[in-house]
Image (cartoon, rainbow, N blue to C red):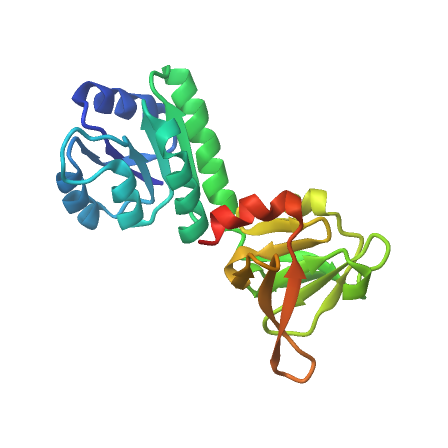
Length: 248
């Protein structure tokens, strides 16, 4: 992968470059200013960013650079705790892999963090589709973005260890012997599917409205008639604060 580095401290920038030498990556940009960095990455076209957050100039912060470029990013900075909510928003709104390591860090700490981050990027990149057991059809290839929500609620059609899965482009199906606790093993990531109730896991991209007064979300699912219908799913008290932080 091609890596672009941004840190206003030249000594730290050179350290980060050195730390990456033993990993299977190519450093294509290394800059101490946001303006110079943005100019360079347009030509170098990196796959991954390693950014400091406070850059010591008034042009842009590292967080602003991340939102501008919309690429997987590892923040390597001394003040990462101040930006945690922004990192969450970057992951949620842009569906990117985002991680951080707080300065000061050792070479081993940086290498281990970055190696794990690369694994996450590769895993996430392969998750446009997942293989699920639907009804009598084993190992069905399903586009993740077509899944609206999963239900363990009997009123929604779920029974026993099975779940009901709803789509935006096909009728709902029975998901065979599926556990919510193992969703990520199947490729349905927590950054993509959120818990709103013990019985429901919802694709955050398909929430069209959150009624905070009545505490339910509205989603559109495919109906057998070939049209879409709106379903209202309850939000339990345990998950209301999380949902409110996601849906402004």
